[in-house]
Image (cartoon, rainbow, N blue to C red; front, top):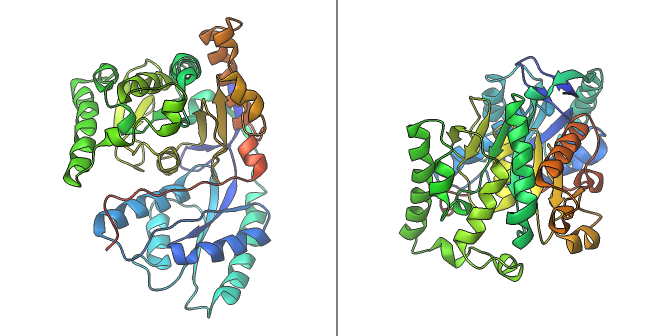
Length: 386
């Protein structure tokens, strides 16, 4: 099985060929938006971090921003900073250049006299970079070059019994073909972590899966909080999920059954191929943000109640098994597997169909979130701002 992708010099393969307009801090986000609005072929992201923060949060922000730049869906990067943020645009650019040979340029708003002057310079640079990017052609690549993030949000009773198992079937197919899959949301392992840990390829990975769940609960306890006050969410409960254990048992289905070969810190870059786990919060937008920073180039997102979310850098394929959601939110849903509940389709057949759609999207087919121009970004915080 093959798809048409963009081969990068580091051996990775992108499914899109964006020029990224990247803010180094929240104060530069709107200027980045102005630049991207004037240059077709560019993508910008809006962030709410990058300044006045503690060291651990700064480190996580830098992993996310650097990871976005390194993502195989990105051809080159235009960085815009303010000038007084924690990590300036030049520092961020140097950090990215040390890890890749992609074209990278940067500008500072305070240095250039404001948004208008900075935008003029950045637009000129972006147009040149887009012209260079446009010369790249899609080529045939084996499915083993795919890196697919697997996510769920707005879950209901149909998620755990139909859409998640179908996506899990797809995930197993990908891993068997040599590709990479990644599942996240640590809080949504809790109550089922012992089941998930059995998939650890080694005793060490088994213990890591247990430990990240324990650490998450301890972290919340130090702040006087309990994850069970927010999980399941009100929407989950309205959709028929009554306990965190019930939700978690359904959630882990979407990752398939193959051995987990690596457990990664939030937004960390993967070092292995196969089935991976990333330690993230249970907030789907920040989890997708972190997995794309970790290198994922396609996202498969299951939802029972429905969600419109998308991402600037990677296509997000929305899968639902709720027939009401499939009809009510047809403008947002890409794949309807409600036939599983009706006995009209097996989980195996649905998994094969989802894989076929992943290959089509990887080859250039737009998802509904892409067609709508959606871009949801959320960078997690280890602790509060100073």
